[in-house]
Length: 134
Image (cartoon, rainbow, N blue to C red; front, side, top):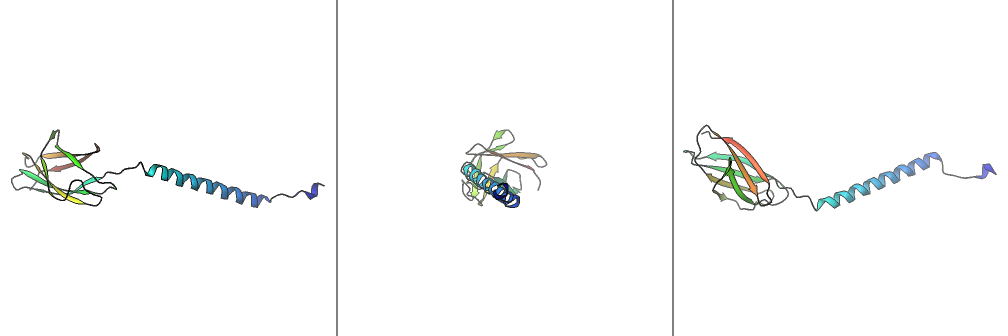
């Protein structure tokens, strides 16, 4: 009677167990990825170039939206004070991949280093530092 008992071989049982574990982990990974995908927003704003005025009365900053969402620049700060900034090319908001040129007027001094902060509509701040050189 003991010889008539049939069961799966250990090799087949191990293969089935591994296949089930892989299937469950892949489905969990896809589910969590889809779950968080709707909540992830990626604002990314970079300065890819700049050009000083000959008398250092303004600087033109070339901004690029390298993120996945549109970026609206609400405020521009030089150091700890807000300044007037005008888009001379491009649009505000910047769509993903767009480039725009922003002119910032200020009493810049040659040789000084300045910190520019760009505050977006979502409240994110992006920093750019540059020294005033001709």
